[in-house]
Amino acid sequence: MLEELEIRDLGPIHEARIAPAKGMTAITGETGAGKSMLLSAIRLISGDAAQSRRVRPGASQAWAQGVFTVESDNPAAVQAAQAGIDTDADDGELFLSRTIPVSGRSRAVLSGHTVPRSVLQDVAEHLVTIHGQADQLRIASASRQRDLLDAYAEDGRQLDAYRDAWQALKAVDERLDTLEHQQSDARQRADYLRESIERINEADPQPGEDEELKAKRSRIENAASIQQGVNGAIAALDASQLDTDTGSAGAADLVRRAAQSLRSIRVDGDETYSELADRLDSIEADLSDVVFTLSRQTDDDDDEGDLDAINTRIHELGELTRRWGPGLADVIAWRDKATFEVEDLDASPEKLEQLRAERDRLAGKALDAARELSGVRAKAARELGERVTAELSQLAMAGSSLEVRVEPRAGGSDVADAAAPLDAHGMDDIMFAFTPFPGSDALPMGSSASGGELSRLMLALELAVAERRGSAADMTFIFDEVDAGVGGKAAAELGRRLARLARSSQVIVVTHLAQVASWAQEQYVVSKQPAHPDTPDEPGEAGVVTTVTRVDGEGRVREIARMLSGSESGTSLDHACELLATSVQ
Image (cartoon, rainbow, N blue to C red; front, side, top):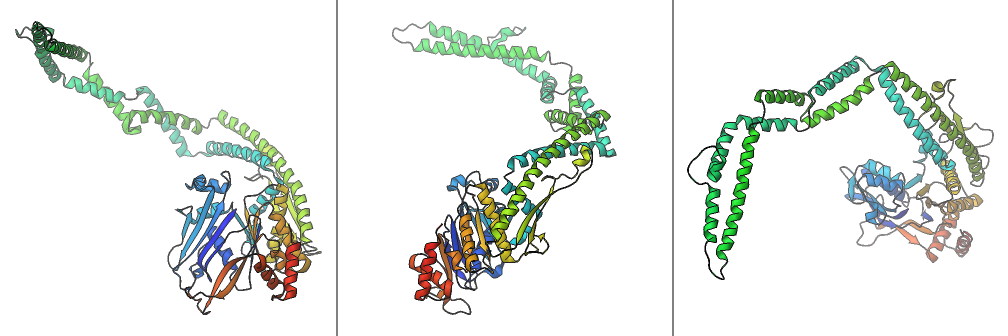
């Protein structure tokens, strides 16, 4: 729902802010006052193309921002999350804004984050629906008509079942197409993969094996210097561990003697020498452990293995890493992945036959799901057409009718041919055919109705969907020119129906009819007023500025009276009071 719309320096409007009602809000004002700029602002924050000529003369840039409240499961919130925006962190609000400079590129911002304009379009698509002369051609698209019918039919279960079946069918089709039409390069790759897998399996590399071998080779190549250093250290620490008799005591023996000498000291009440002796014992134990470890090291070095065999294995593993590396773990991962790829590239007759059988099974399942979906759509289409036609008779379009056509595409006799007409959305061609007056041909909607008629058609359609759904929709509907060519009783009925739609969705209507505006909970008036001395004058209209003002109470009565008769006479004011009193939702 749109909580707030704020604009600055857009068209004739210097600054304006509106807070639409949760239900219905009317935007009124004299012709030429600038009501269209509010719609322009909403289109801009919805991702429409920016035009610098919309910047107010004398200003450096125009700016518009809409604040929307959304539930966490709203598709708009999901789209925002994909752009890195957490709506929960902003109390469930989304801020959509655009800045249009006089020169240079426009800037799109979503909740404080600069984003591509397409992101605003994706988010706004689930927040705002505009029905105006510039927006009605979208209903002429087959996809929009299909989506609207599906929304009315409430066929989500059937649609999900069909989409799952369709995706499974397409996945098998892709594999089958790859196997049936693989070229010589694919066959060559399969041969290369098989040879590579065989070569790696023969070598049987183990993770980290090459590094272990290199470390072992280094020890062998430096065995002499290692042995000399180790023997020297052992001789210095404990010569008794060697097969030589140097005739001198090692460090461990000297430390042991020092400890014994300290323990021979007897001084009553003084444990200093005993404690020092204990410390020397600990040092002697550490030295003995070092000697033991060094002795084991010389034993291990004797078993390092044949240097030639180690070099041969290192070279063999190096060949693998050069071709499929950079490391042995990468070689092993490549082999495992290549094994699965070979299976897909191996177009054996048995595998092809299995896939064709699986394809026929999935095609039959998708066809059954498409037929069920088509049946639900056809039933809903008849009801929707009748319901909209009944509404049109009350909207100054008596004699007009809408027919919603659902035409299943024909297939062949066997399963494969029968499933051929399927696409991602089912098996139906859907068209909204509009008959503007009795006796005329039914033509595609969008090419057979005026802008005002299309707006009223869309009102009837949105109303039918909203009342069929029976619950509030997190969507803002904006209607412009919906009252074109309407007056009298039809105008009152138009207002009544907008109010009905506002029971389940937020509605904003730009209107010049008092009979429509009187049904709104909130009313804003766009008008030209004498400028404040601190407000820049409008070029060409010295001392005049366009304002947007919320009216209620007596102010609203006067505006309704102006819309009724162009004046605020006693009679028109009485009529306005009566109209507001009777327009009760």
